Image (tube, rainbow, N blue to C red):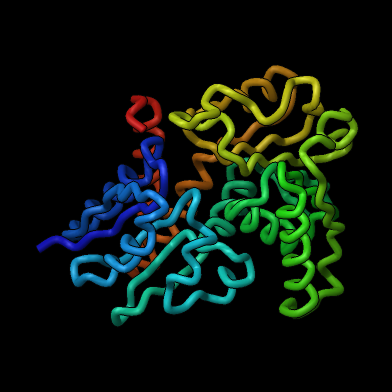
Length: 296
């Protein structure tokens, strides 16, 4: 009888994770199926509880549940607990353990595909949800000089700033080395035209522009707000080139799609579930192939 791993989120019609994860499982001839488990909010508890069934091995967690899933788990590892978001659940001895591989995936793609070292650089984060938390923690740990977290709800951005500052103070082995200046700003601050003026990196952690979403075809920024020579990193990966990336390319900025991050975080999840070395090239190629065919 096959075992199962799934993706828990709502909505998830845009997701290509089932395709590239299944390609990796098939590479090892594992009798495991990766499924898309679209889960409405009132059914989240039931979906997590179902992971305890013998045939289930774990799950990925995506929008909007990366934060709300934490109290439903038996244990959360230190990184995910500090970030306050889980994107990978692993069942071990019928206990559900939570991990965050978004942070790893983000940095891996930033270095390898974006050819960008954040140390000493000024970064702007759009959004303050689960993935924004992982991104912000990763950039602080890599010694970005400053971080602006911009969100429609200022209080949520301010809460994220507080949690990062607590992490640096309480958990860092050498807090004196982590000197990022972290600031929360309301969304309207973007309209001045000066907020993004001197930044080196802009990361879109919202779902604006995502295929099949209510904001499909939209961009969180207009062209005149995007500085030349900045790296615009859109974590939305479907479509392959979002409206934001199109605008950024047109004004002469560098661009990075969220596809590489998606695959790299999935690579780390795969290893947690199976204990096997992930076939990264197979996973990347399948993800590219699916987007080109427009199946996601």
